[in-house]
Length: 242
Ligand SMILES: N[C@@H](CCC(=O)N[C@@H](CS)C(=O)NCC(=O)O)C(=O)O
Image 1 (tube, protein in one colour):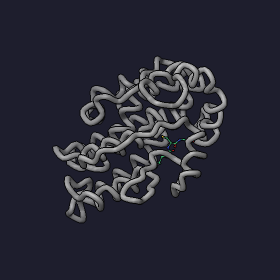
Image 2 (cartoon, rainbow, N blue to C red):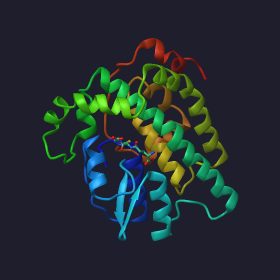
Image 3 (cartoon, rainbow, N blue to C red):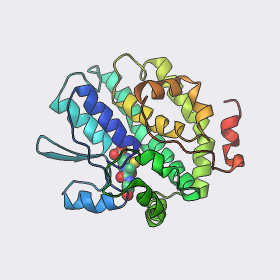
C-alpha cells in the first residue's frame, strides 16, 4: 500500500473483517509503480495483494478474491438483486468517489505538502517521513499528472460532492450500505469518505450526515489531517444546504 491510500485501507479493513492476517508493505507513490511491476503484479497501483499464491491488483478485485478464499463473513450478499446493488455502489465508490477524493488530495498537497507527513505517520518507507515529505516535490508533480489533477477537475468534483453525499445517504436509507454486517461497498465508500474527512475543507460538510457516520464507524483510525487550503469559492457548493 501507499500510506493513507483509501482503496488500500479499504482492502486492509476487508482482510481484517475476514480475520485474515497480513503483512503490510508501505511504498512511496510513483516508486510503487516500479516495485509492483518488478513484483509481477497484474497492475501498478495499490492496493496490490499477494495471497494464496495469487497476485491481485485493485480493491474491487481484492474484495471478490477474499470472498472466494474465505467466504465468511461475506462481503457480498447472496441474494442476486441485493448483490447487484452492492456491486453498483462499490463500482461507483471506486470509479467516481475514490478518484475524485484522490484528485482533491493531490490538488491540496500541491498547494501545501506538509500534511503528507500526517498520512505517512508510522509508515515504513525506508526513509524518515520528514525526508520523504521534504523531497516529495517530483512525486507530487508526477501524481498530479498521472491522476489528471487539474483545477477544473477538482472544482467539478467539489461541485458534485453534495449530490454524492445525498447518494450515499440514500443507499444507507435503502439498506444497501450501513447494515450491521459491512459489505464491500461499505468499505470502499467509507474509505473514500474517511479520506475526504481528513481535509478540514470538506469535513464539516460530511461529518453530520449518515455518510459521515458510516465513514467514522468503519474507519475510526483513518490517518491524516490537512488544514484548509483550497480556494474558498471552490468550496461554496459544500456550504450551501443540499
Ligand atoms: N481504482 C484503484 C485505485 C488505484 C490507484 O490509483 N491507487 C493509488 C493510490 S490511492 C495509487 O496506486 N497511486 C500511485 C500511482 O498511481 O502512482 C483501486 O481501487 O484499486
